[in-house]
Length: 416
Image (tube, rainbow, N blue to C red):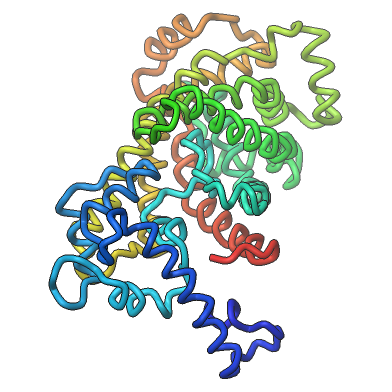
């Protein structure tokens, strides 16, 4: 239990009376500071408008109705305002002790890796930045992403394999595809290209986070609060910047994934051969469809997530204002799936352009020509080749990522 771990100062896994009393005193002080930060007009009461203002700081625009429902879940005397005693009673035995922790129940956390995620980076508060929590969050998310991608690498390789090699005349099923890969390179070949996929997590995450902070400053008026559309633009630009920086690794991942046994001895050998045979431009093949895919993915991902989360709050906020872990994970999984569904054709075009030079007898064509060629030879559904293994990896990726992320957070001393 989180309260036990928070109050257990001697780490004997037992919370004695003295430790419990000390925990309550410290916790109550933090809750009082949070209450005062929400009480904008200093009248000793929190009203629906004040909850809306506090959420707006984090970019969450809440309707009057939803704000009232959240307030109703805390309001014990039916006055539609919350005084200090009601606030204390509601959160005293809840380990969340500051507004960021409390509101995090209603936020979309994007540190969890759910596949080809290009979503907007999560916000870090000033306190998290100054106390060093932000880098531990990023490390936790990075390790979780690495383990998650490694666990689902066979499905990821199958997706790329089907995107490039499957067609009307050469239909590849999951079973036949895995058989081909195992026959050609053994069971270990199912993880071919995963090394690059894992290595690129760290620079991509770091660049995305730093870029997001800088773009927020550029897009937000001095002293003003960042608006949802500004956050979306900053996130999209940060994602585009990160993708531009690490894109050569994306190309190498695709080439290694499709490569035959012995074709490349590793990432550096792959880079060397591409550079020698095709030149520097080869490292940015498929770049345009990749960047174009950021907008529909991030936009739909956020829109669907907020719609699902708000629908849950509208229906159940009378009982609790906390959607809970499984609701948030469910919303994140569905929204990510919808985002991927919308951007998948662009992802397929990107992969085929990345792989063109490595395919025997393949014609080097532009993005427009490639789309026309696929529609003519394979039909509309040709743009969705390999989407089955892509969807199959979403739930295990979310599950693995979350479990590892929580263990890493705990190990690095980040309280929930």
